[in-house]
Length: 190
Image (cartoon, rainbow, N blue to C red; front, side):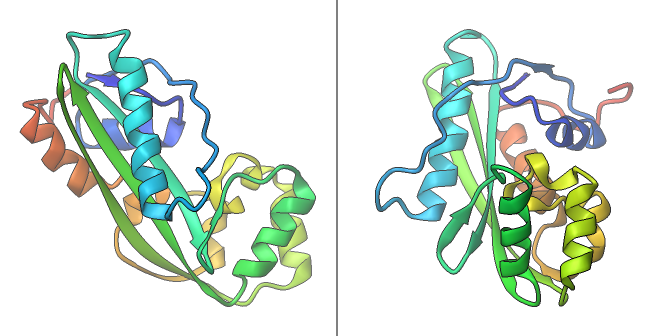
């Protein structure tokens, strides 16, 4: 199997469930289309990533994935800079947002895509906490400007849904898709 992502988090999650894979990251335009709903966006991104890499590996099963943070119907991508990260975290402070993760598998002419929504509630954050967290550098490459699997875990008061989806890959749903495509999970030595 080929993982169409350079995300270290997705690599770790696949290894966690014993999937053997190689990495060949897709380089695509990730700009949302005008008026595109968040679910349609993450599913389109996951499928485009998988199809782009599948064109280079026509005999392999290719997994593409995308994760977005949604707040007040707006997609919050990766921050452009520290000031953008601070602004995003101030919006999320004390509020609930949604994390959408899509996973797509492509093999030959066969493809499947699905998405998982998880509700995440942040505790109230002080301006000083936000500044100190941004100064760690962790928010720089994370949708929504935080990483629940890292130091950002202390920002989160509660989640309703899939923890692994918030990290970047919904494992239960991914394993089910892999089984459909006859890609083994739970392999030793991964």
